[in-house]
Length: 584
Image 1: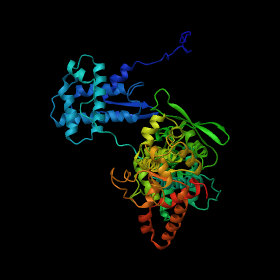
Image 2: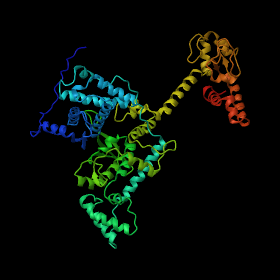
Image 3: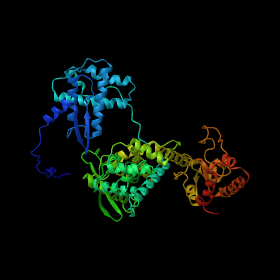
Image 4: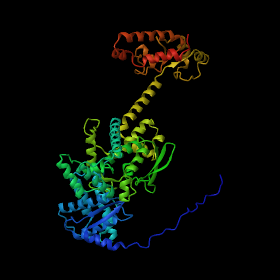
């Protein structure tokens, strides 16, 4: 084979450019080291890193503060606020280890291999989960690498080499995150749809009412303030006057602020219902749903629309699209259109492009942080229970697997159709191999084994035409005919080896007994034995036995009949009488 070698052509690109007003990070780092406290902005979220509570060891604290500051910069290993907070937590845990062991380490140069290994052993002795321990060790080792890079030569050569790996102690295989059962999935959908219907009712324009009382006038003024600013605080004079007037009139003020803002903005509990419904309907990751933008719907056509979302774990291919149904509120596209409509006012006040902006704790925000307490309140409000009758522990990260498990059942386990949004290998290992789908896999294996057994024990059925062919050439191998019995074919078909329902090609080589022993099964066992040979001569006996079995079902109980004849006897009889042999 000849041909010209392909020469790779350079891909078209553009010249990289950087802004001219980049500031020197040195002063900011110096301020952060001195104060041990600095602000970070990662992935659209802000937070404060505070290491002022580290007791003593000032030189070491400055080194770790610099390492944490570097990790939280653009392009650093932190990436998100949550990861940065985890790094700060690891520093505080390392400090508790130094204090608990009365360590004399005061500076970065004094950290040696024993100190690093001692931290690993200290967490192990305290009963830390192996995987959590390795995670904490990874954070501290990474910060020490940054500190070593920031101050070269401070660590000893042995300590620097120790930073090449995290830990020598093994972890444990992580327990796969399981899907919820179908009953829990249905209950979650019902609860979420009920909340969506309540939100739609809440956002309907209220009828204009005359201000008949002072409370009515104060409410109108308070709503006007919300429309103007976006929210009203409990310290506002209008809210205080309204609160006092309602209290004086004997009207309950419980949840007054949320009820008022809930007519203009989404609340935290609303987000849980929307996240649950969107994840169960589309299979989107919760972190992707949280960061959806207001312009996430693309290319609507023929009752479908594409959802544009960001999956940060997909390195170099973060932005993806998923095509979903579009229509009323019962479709993912229609639900997102409602969310866009409901959050328009809040986004306008915040000047934010994030879709899920909401009112929480006296202010508008577009940062969706973990919602453990809100999830518990939502579960309790709807009375959701798990498969054991206990209050449901709602884990939002399990919803994607729940959607995948339902789709797996729907596609019959066909991985090519099941793998949507990832490779077949990931679909099989992460979403197909989960405890919720284990009964399906076990049933499939059991069914395959039963099919194999049935195929192996099927008797040979010869129609009149096939019988003539076998007698004409008994030495030739016939499909489905018992092997090694060609010399006995004439005697076998002449009836010399007949039992009642078939001719037996191996009475002393039965698959149900040891070789050389007589067959121990009843005569109807020939219907499920590989040694049986059924010809047209046996059709009257088969039909007579079928009538007998049917009559016995009328006089025996179901359990007795099943134990005596078995579930497949009647089916085999009918099949042989109707399909396998030509009628007399």
